[in-house]
Length: 90
Image (cartoon, rainbow, N blue to C red; front, side):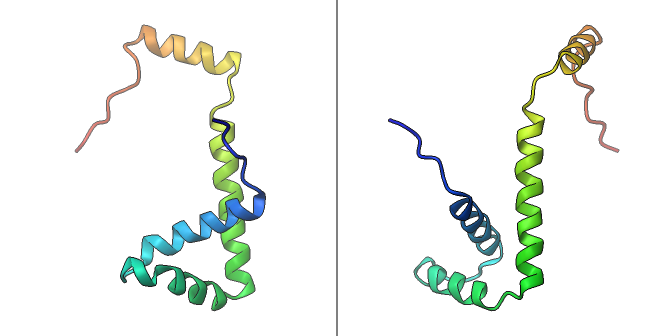
């Protein structure tokens, strides 16, 4: 089965729905109406801020998966030292 590629509009709408869902405190039955109300009350600055966050998040995700000789060499060197450093909890 082919994975359908989302349009930029659909990706941004899904991003906004995710943000709304994180803060939503109601029943699932009312979530769609609540999202529409929340969205209609956003001002232009808030929408632009969300757009910039969505773009930054997508870029970071895509750039982090880029393979390079430098990253491969760094991973190899870290492997010789025992791998990823352990997180120290103080």
